[in-house]
Image 1: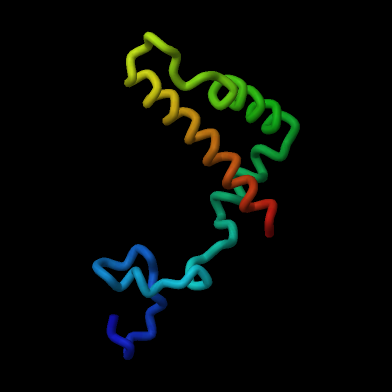
Image 2: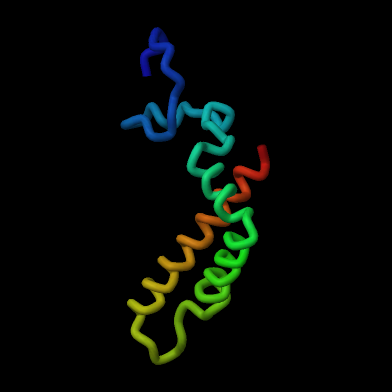
Length: 95
């Protein structure tokens, strides 16, 4: 990265430039989508829905012996969506 350039380094910069990014350079706060998730899932109905999603995904085994491996991959994909919802809510709460 050219030192004359005032652009903040990002871990997404191409090549080796992203290696110069420091954790303090990376935004840590919530974005608008995080706040939206927080607003939706902080209502009574939203908490109830999130509880249903938790029980249907994270609360169930991802794979059982004898099942095809692709079933486990699919289930982990479902789980990751629910975990992403929880992470976004957590980021918005930590404002």
